[in-house]
Amino acid sequence: MQRIAIIADTHVPSRESAVPEWVVEELRDADRTIHAGDFDSRRTYDRIDAMANGALTAVRGNTDPPTIDVPHAATLEADGVTFVVTHGAGSPAGWHQRVAGTARSEAPDSDSVAVGGHIHEVVDTTVDGVRVLNPGSATGAAPADRATMHVATVENGDLTVELRTE
Image (cartoon, rainbow, N blue to C red; front, side, top):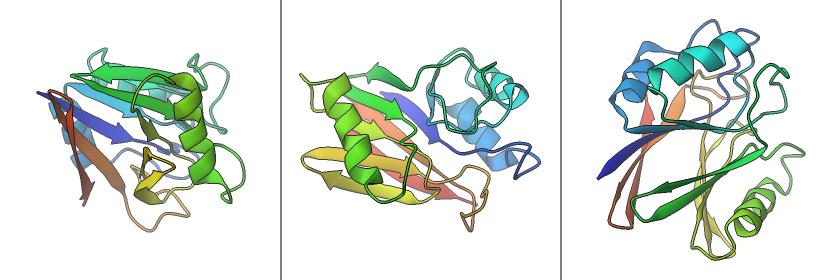
């Protein structure tokens, strides 16, 4: 069984001063961490990478500086589940389809789970047969109204996703 912390849109320091301590605890307790972009600074990326103990899967968000050398899309295989991570940058209109499309193109031979960020809204839905997740903003950065994240549990191909908030 693997426990995966899923976060996005931390935006530290431009919109928020720090990652909340309850999120830090969730990251430290997880076996893996997914960050769907918009760390906002190299310092925030380094801090989250350290909390993930080298088990970070991350992608570039539209506000990330070039010093954060991560791809625009990444794949994580965890105990029989394929996660395809992208930020989903662009207009909020069409975000769900854009993120699901990235999952289909990055992992065409699997029943992947798409993870995106960008819109700062919690999402857990299915689009054209692809489960699409967005953990919202881990810091509650505007336009979010509170800090949120997902915690996924994967065991033998079975996936359970829980929303966490303070």
